[in-house]
Image 1 (cartoon, rainbow, N blue to C red):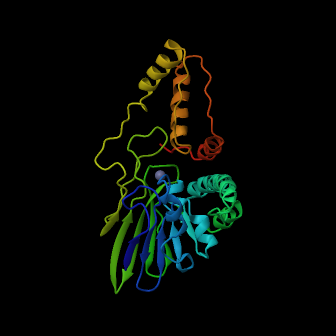
Image 2 (cartoon, helix red, strand yellow):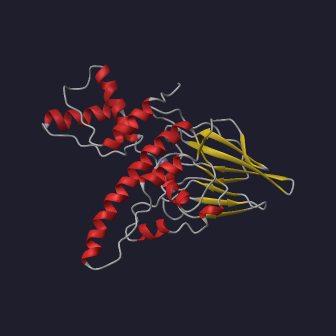
Image 3 (cartoon, rainbow, N blue to C red):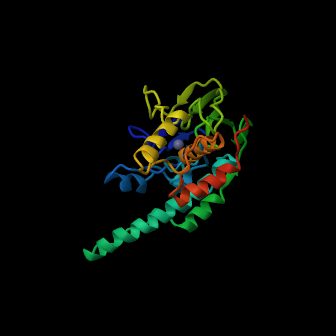
Length: 297
Ligand SMILES: [Zn+2]
């Protein structure tokens, strides 16, 4: 077998790894979009570096756009196989991919106006809402800890990895020349202490591990997540200084954690009488989806 990396290498976005087996099966691990790389972003997203139509199936670790964001483009370019993921990932990915299509339409219109001024050819957005709807039809729902066989001589198991609702580490067992090889794809690795998510489960032994290393050897700063610290910042900013506390947070995952902590403070009658606003339609949609998956502690 052969493993090639088409993203999330020397950078943290664009997760896309291709496992090609001797029997011709091609397994794509994630199909993420490159984000925030300046002038290189568009060119990195425009070419996969492999033939989309040749992929047998996709194993999607979780819904974040840097892992799922190019699925509609993959389908648009001829991929017809299944995109395996958990139910929660399917629901969140649908919301996020439509949001991504919206952003691209808006940004492309803006860029094309400027290009038209200089008599330049218009850019095409990477994909449309229609492409998202086509991609969503190819989702194949899988459960945690239940091995399934997406192809001959391939067995796959999704394991909770505590990063996001529905997120998974993926264990892949391949038999070639009567020899079994176990590969573990970690996805994004969650924290052991999260107010809303179960901690990552143990993963099986593997011969090869493809592991996320975004934070390398750094310790996560948990101080702001700590309920008392958050309360201290709120009091200092909103009461003492009579100001407004603006918290920048990812729409899916972090925003819901912060809302959960604020709710806890409210239930304990510790939160001062303040208005709280979530200024993001995407966050509100994601919160509705996430509410359907309460953690089973
Ligand atoms: Zn992620």
